Image (cartoon, rainbow, N blue to C red; front, side, top):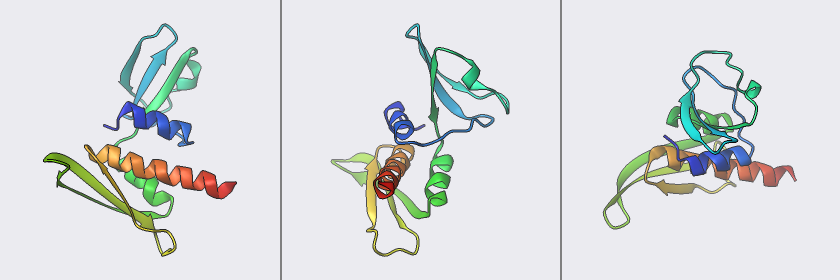
Length: 130
């Protein structure tokens, strides 16, 4: 599962979420409590719950689909990096565009590596739209 910290950054960067069956999300309630939940059925209207902030926790497949949907390719691998700590590496670049350099992101989970790539893409898109 993607870290809550990266999930919040993705939301702040503009990643939109349309809840689907079995999506994971966090709910932070105004009373200070929070938890991780799953959308139990299609069409659940989370906006109707007032005083709650929802943060989507996308799966690896959802993150990779979002990367591809924005015109990037990816390759994920894993091995021992950084003093024997198991790390995942996700490499990405814009499809059919050699002007955007190959980027490499390392993380302790493949989800966080993919989330870091997607965050980088969202930030590039914001910069390009200015």
